[in-house]
Length: 260
Image (cartoon, rainbow, N blue to C red):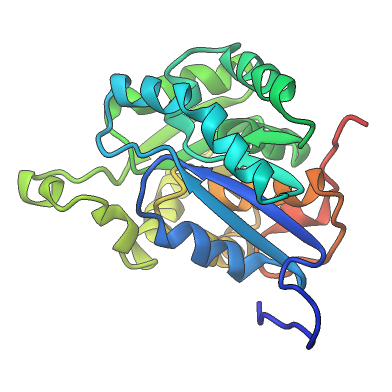
């Protein structure tokens, strides 16, 4: 989506969406945000400085959430999104509610999580039996399957694009630079091999995904939810921005329910 502005207007004149990313380097998140962003909507990013995919680093990141929220509150954002499904999912079902309650005690700015936005998106689209594509290892994928099950969503097949060799593993964040053909063909093949599925869930916002949503939905005629897409949808909804976002999935045809 082409960015536009008028002289005299601030870039985030319509809404500023705060984005708490796990990793300190996050080029894809900002790029994909602006692919989808309506006119007058900007992203304000901060990091929890996760550099290794370990439970200790996830826990340390969660303990710094109050600092990140304070930074975004100081920047006067209209909504806050916590990116990174492992931070919530590894703490088990029910932790998201506790996290959001803690943030609500700190600030009146509404917040959603990555995993929460994905689940809300799949429920909104009527997705109940999905195939899941991730950039995570087998252990994390199992936790995601279990977590989604608590929300009434059955993951009937999974595939990971986690690096399969030590050389690839040594290239940190290499998943963020993979060509779009990789997740496209992986998601398509996974869905076509699973007749019982009613949609595709692509999680892991570091992995490029939003640019393939429209092609997958057109080619397979099923709904597709990705982390970055769902987080944008939630961020706009919480900021009370109603705008057409074309070319990034049928999810944007539906209003985000703020519960208000």
